[in-house]
Image (cartoon, rainbow, N blue to C red; front, side):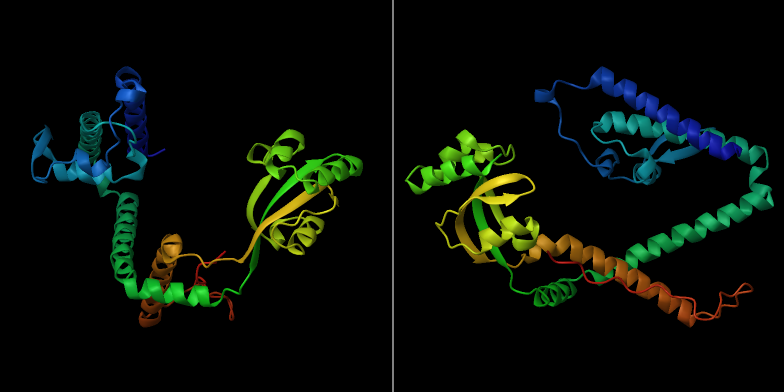
Length: 306
């Protein structure tokens, strides 16, 4: 394994061990625990401020900010003081190791230079895609995708129902008779139902569409009117007595409910479109060209609306 990889792993391990020990020693009781803060909060407002030097080389608050953004160094639940201390220790290890590697002429090797060029290109592309994707997420684009998505929705009926589940038809018939005789459905469900998921809620199943239930149950529920109580209905789970509370057309999801999905769609599509455009505009000479008719990536579809 290359020396710099060992350094990264050793530093990450040291950071992890330090974090574990610090958390165990310093975590306050739950009722006094401070609220978690973002990684950015550990960084001073003055990016040029020097927090340490290693053989004369400075480590600044801006350097800490870069380290804090590294997913591999995520420190959830750690207070700002601990976080800064751990990041400084990590950056010191990084500088010490990097200086030793420089002295050993590691950076002069052709292999290192290839890796450096690769990671430079990768960082440039990642930052460029992120920068360009932000331009695609506008209120106008978000609402256009939302309007397009909801237009594709077909009106769908929903039922709000309760049920009581028992083992046999005879018991189900007795329960149906009790309810039709005037007993409260929710009370009887809490007393007799074998369904642990709804028993405590008086048999309440909430709102559901037809495809969410097994066919025989759905057929009975969607054939009833509000207030009706069914005869016993058999499914693979047992025998049911069903009461329909309400029927409605399923409401469309709101913009806020879909916003995160829409934003992710816009980001993915803008980034993919950008790469395809850059490829189309570039002069590319592949020495191992793929076979004719090789598929190209398709644009991601709009977010599915359920």
